[in-house]
Length: 236
Image 1: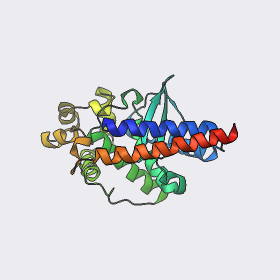
Image 2: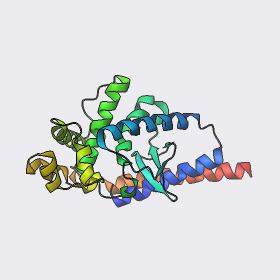
Image 3: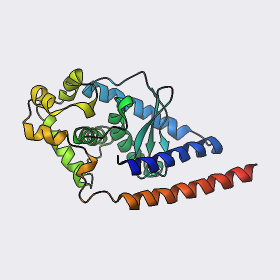
Image 4: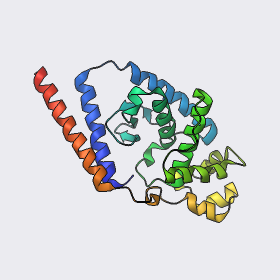
């Protein structure tokens, strides 16, 4: 994720944590989401290899963020932050959890430049999961680069659905799987391997409007701070 957007998304995530501490609201829904997330991770491990279990998975949290994403905290804890759509739609929550769960296989590597391989795999698995568990079939993400990554990963997995598991015995971190490994272990052609190893965010066309999105996030953050201040002063 581009640094400017990552910074603002991080601020909105921290805002969600602050609201959580102040509100003391019932966490039943978050716990339900965590149960599903743990089941999702079990399925992912069967398909794509083990996750780093030295990290504790915290309950997902719903935020004002424009993009769902995972974040790592001290004491080896990791939390997935969801967008507002997850609050009103169980299907949206499940889809986002299935996608982001792929990214937490190697929590220590969260924050590295995402590759088309990892984003394509996350999209592939989320489509697969939604169809199998909820009977919801997705044809497209609505975003060109995600769809391109999905098609490329589909080609990679066409002959062997467990090839990611094999690749991760050589290189556990998906974003570090290189062209040579893809060609030698997966047996794909060099052009497909080169494409899968590209930086995901550099492939957006047109480029992500960083200024516009950062400005929007800044406004959301400012609004959130005002809400927190009003809540704190009311309770004081």
